[in-house]
Length: 347
Ligand SMILES: Cc1cc2nc3c(=O)[nH]c(=O)nc-3n(C[C@H](O)[C@H](O)[C@H](O)COP(=O)(O)OP(=O)(O)OC[C@H]3O[C@@H](n4cnc5c(N)ncnc54)[C@H](O)[C@@H]3O)c2cc1C
Image (cartoon, rainbow, N blue to C red; front, side, top):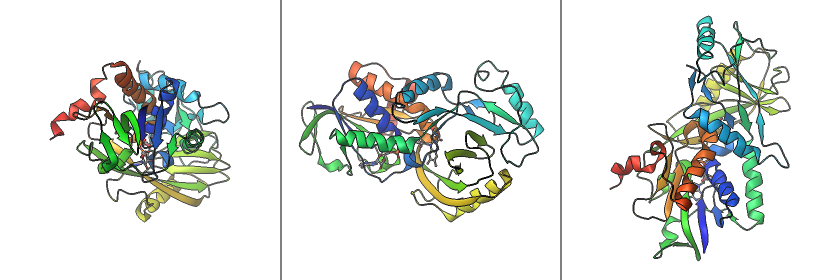
């Protein structure tokens, strides 16, 4: 019998698998390609919401844990790196708000109070501010590499999980002839198809990026944020976005998002660019903007790790640890992320 079957290999499944490996637990992973959220994500770990200069949820706790966790993947290749995010001010008032925020004790470690000029070819009448401690996770590459590694050790199965094939024994569960002590569902927005957990209030929010090339932008080693982010991909390629939409919840790029992003990008940069691609994914979001972690109310071998919203990368290492400590050490979970806050929806 194995300890865990993980269903879904986005950032939730990946961080959970790594934590299980570090604890020497036995596990398998089954995942398909029905959801693309983690594959298309920007991978930005940014501790501050840069519109109103509020600290992101739990950033003081989540950032150091995430930095320590993701650094361990950097053995043969750089999947995770520190990178400066520059916020381009939209007005003098915006710049003043930054200066006020950077003086607040909770924001001070994350916002440099010194106002800066940029070398990049951006159109702005104003200067910019530097976000401290930001990082970039090259998530698509990391997912590919980890999938390959787990496939080589015969732990990864590229299949769609069939819920009706799961059977319950007295103390464990069985899937396709293998017994597991627990199953953890990490399906992102795919949870809508899961008969055990589809009663939870997880909603889709579609996000899209343009991929563009610009030889003159001169921002290959920084992230720029105006209304959207410009994220460097190397060799003068960049990602620009992302959009937020509750319509057309699928992974197909839309013409509407392309036009919106293209016009905003033209306003933001002061040089030629060529659009080379467009990608889309659906974020799994929860109305109270907190993730959902926990155990099924009746089937005690079934667990969920989901609802990561728009900042899944920063939160995933902490959330996967909370779940593992709950499963293996019976430690209580933080109430604000626990599935128990939604038990009223379980009929
Ligand atoms: C455009 C965009 C940009 C983003 N940028 C950032 C960013 O810069 N920083 C940040 O922190 N967050 C970002 N996010 C949010 C972040 O990507 C999400 O929070 C995160 O991807 C959710 O991860 P997940 O593992 O829960 O779900 P997913 O990434 O959707 O992974 C779920 C996996 O489970 C598989 N699956 C589903 N159902 C089944 C089934 N029945 N059988 C087998 N497999 C199944 C899916 O195919 C998929 O592989 C962004 C999201 C989008 C869409």
